[in-house]
Length: 394
Ligand SMILES: Cc1cc2nc3c(=O)[nH]c(=O)nc-3n(C[C@H](O)[C@H](O)[C@H](O)COP(=O)(O)OP(=O)(O)OC[C@H]3O[C@@H](n4cnc5c(N)ncnc54)[C@H](O)[C@@H]3O)c2cc1C
Image (spheres, rainbow, N blue to C red):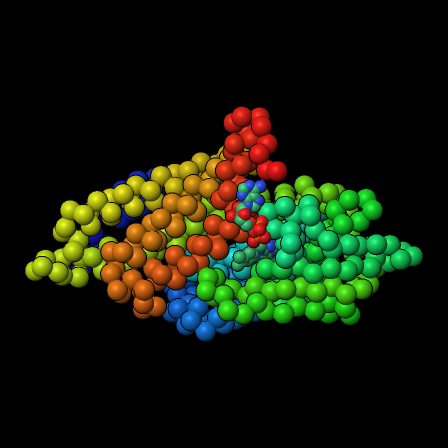
């Protein structure tokens, strides 16, 4: 008999996760879950198969319920806690990492950069529309030859009278070819600075990366900036040096610490159902000890990941979250979520590779999540340096 949704223990109830959330956090979780179940989940396998995420339609739906820039204050943003934002990321990624990526890039990378480093005028002119989802933002840091080491970027911004002239190419930029505004990081004579580039500016071009086998329900692009001329006030006045870009990345990494577990949970729930209904040798495969060892191990990995994420959320809300703890959270929770997705794949046997089930899609997506926002190796090096005092990056 298939395991029903009313089974006594779920991966969340096993760890009494609900007792750790306040009323507002549970309400946020329910709102996002409802939105995901009605607007995203019914379509996401198709979007993934055809590599065709309707970014603008989805963004407007997300904006309508206050999910874009939700932990920012003012300018039409919801001003929720970091923990609530994390829980929203978890629910979104239970649908697909691509949808959570859309929200991470719009909120934590583009909007956070404008909110934290922008002038009052920049905030007022961009944030309300980004929060509503009627304007799409992207964040251009990575280049083809500068990924883990963004300090190696070649994109330049130089003064021409009072204007700026930007030249360079950015690679692997989420939302790039649908964006209305790009936060572009470029080398200037005063170090690396961030610029707000309306994508309609002459000299700006973006093309979508084709042939991805991961994050197919996400738009990934190359940006070309060829003599892009911007007024003096296009620079983000508060963004000084690469540290400002990394500050925004830390916001996005925080969301991933929660988000990746959503993909893991979706795999786990699909697998529990499948294992209860699938019979071999005359009994449900859920009844075999080897299957149960996998299920128990995955539930423990998932639950400890959620506890870690909530600890990061509480620490961030209290103002004490360090980059090292974010690295520990991203390293652990993405690695564990990927391990869960791969193990779930084995429980589903041949069906595990079918798009009828979400498992292989999540597993493929998590390969990207393992790499972007700092690879697992780079986060290990951050922790290695913290523990030993010895940087081993180069
Ligand atoms: C789907 C997707 C979306 C993305 N979206 C964005 C975006 O919106 N904006 C943006 O700016 N970027 C984005 N990125 C880029 C992403 O951040 C980079 O891919 C990531 O930083 C890694 O850079 P790289 O791919 O050039 O790998 P590399 O830096 O070339 O690394 C290759 C391998 O070498 C390892 N390595 C590198 N240096 C060291 C070292 N010192 N010690 C040990 N191992 C090392 C890495 O860990 C990795 O395993 C996206 C990437 C993907 C896949």
